[in-house]
Image 1 (cartoon, rainbow, N blue to C red):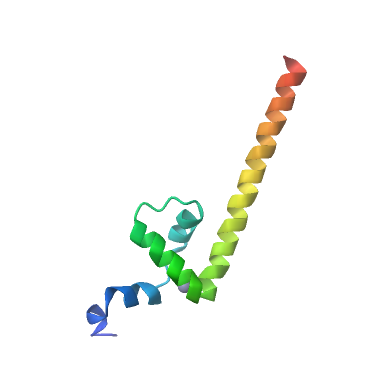
Image 2: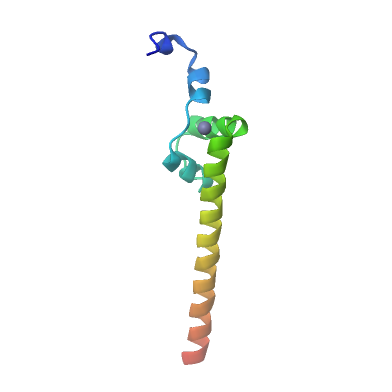
Length: 84
Ligand SMILES: [Zn+2]
């Protein structure tokens, strides 16, 4: 228990807390609505290797999803030219 936790400066609390994985995922997608969350994740990633690993994982996932979508779109275009 940390009885004085509420007295810590807000920024310090933010830096010491790991953002949830969903927040990191939203950060990767550039979909975080709250700018202070963006700043928090950015600053946290600078100091936390654990979260950097999650970030990398999410980033790879998003990149492969985008590549997959592009491939699908490309395949659709080719099908269209074949059948139209
Ligand atoms: Zn962390």
